[in-house]
Image 1 (cartoon, rainbow, N blue to C red):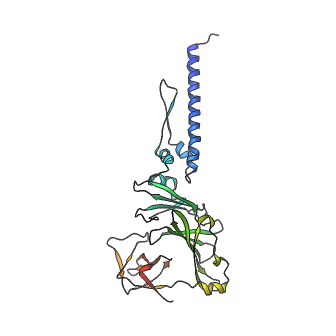
Image 2 (spheres, one colour):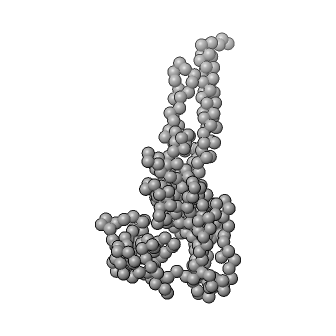
Image 3 (tube, rainbow, N blue to C red):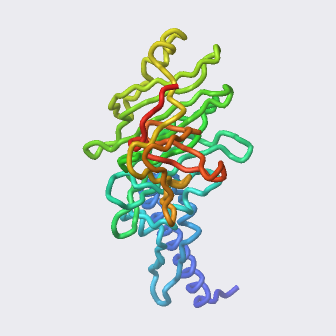
Amino acid sequence: MSINHKKYLLLFGLTLMISACKENSTLINDTQTPILNAVHDIQPNSFENNKKISYIKNNESVSFDKTEQLVQANNQKFTAKYLAGNYPNNLYETYDYDVNTDGIKDKIFSSKNDENNTYQGDNLIVYLRNPDKLYRLSLETTNYTDETGWFLTDIYPRENHSGFILKTHYSPRGNSNQFYYFDKIDNEWMLSKYVSEGTLITGEDYYCVENNNFNLSEFEYGESANFTEKQFQEKCSPLPLEYRVIVEKAEILTDNFESRSPPNYYIKGDTIEAFDQNEDWVKLAYKNGTKFGWVAKRNLKSIPN
């Protein structure tokens, strides 16, 4: 049987081209993997699905049309759209707060439970936004939640825009909360304050504040974790429920800590009732209980219970 040498050579060349293509593709994936692992939750497949491979005629090389994601991963800069795709709202809560006092809103992503309240992880990631509107990874750590029942409640901005406040609650118990005060000190993320709050089995409320600048890797729960009931009563007085405005005008921010247009205020001498609070903020109701908002605590003076 005779062999058509032209067809044989053509098939052999095509086989070599496909083989070269596969090798190049694998090499690029291998190169991408370490880059991807440096950024939390970026899946290699997200790059693979966006890759466009084109053969160049009369040339055995393969060109790759790099996507926005690949370029960003190499430069360690990310657009808001890219981050939204990698931290989907079914897995993460997203917060837009200025956390480094530059007047630009940054992004915080925290793992959250699903719609059935099933635990989905303890990731906490912070990206700082640059003036060029791109984001750089600044912090990747835990949000202090777990499968035993400590779940994310919310994240709040600091009143001075330096860091943020993370609140968790213990779901098996009626009222047991923890607050973690994150600050960036000398370009390093620290826990400047830890607060435990709740209700004892006797029905008495407690609020324990521990001021310590812990490196995140060195944080340990403070002495209040081992308090007796008597120590809670002696050292952890509950927060007051009423406050008086001590400045000429105390602005009422929205639930998302934004100014309203036009702004709403309480004026000096007004008394307000706290529906929720932390070290920086007091949440209140106004307009006959139809609206809620936040007032900076520095503008208020507590009225003893």
